[in-house]
Length: 210
Image 1 (cartoon, rainbow, N blue to C red):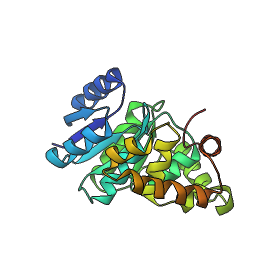
Image 2: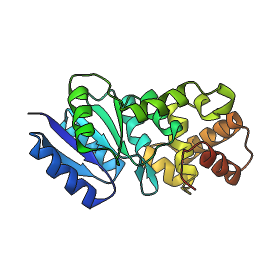
Image 3: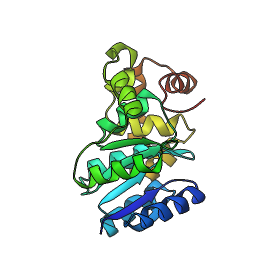
């Protein structure tokens, strides 16, 4: 029996997913709305598969995906989200997600993605595949975020959501001084001088919603 873990900031969504997955013969071993708690649970429970939303209130599922990749945790990931931005699809796939499923898709699409991921295979519905192609064929100059490291992308996502250096440091286990160094470096790479400009750039590239 496959063991799955759910990360979504809506309790009702998690309850619905649990019912669908258990009816299909899967076992849901845990769930959370918080990336930090989810990471601890993933280490402890070692599920086969992670179902991950990208929009977690003032946090991003990409933060958790980056930590899973950095720690080389033995769990496959499917992103299940409302975000149909090419940037989000490309970013998630670059960071190790095997599949990207839109929440408006039929349940059968999610189950196909799960079956493929459990075999270590990628599965993308035609509409998502089109978004991935748009992301992967975009000119480098159109996507400054492609120049950022996974850690820098984590930090920029938290900065544009209003987190202070101290708060980011606590969440990522870094000193505020280290966070400030990352901030200066990534803003230099992106060619922006202040946080408002960084926010506008993040909205334009689909990193956050307006």
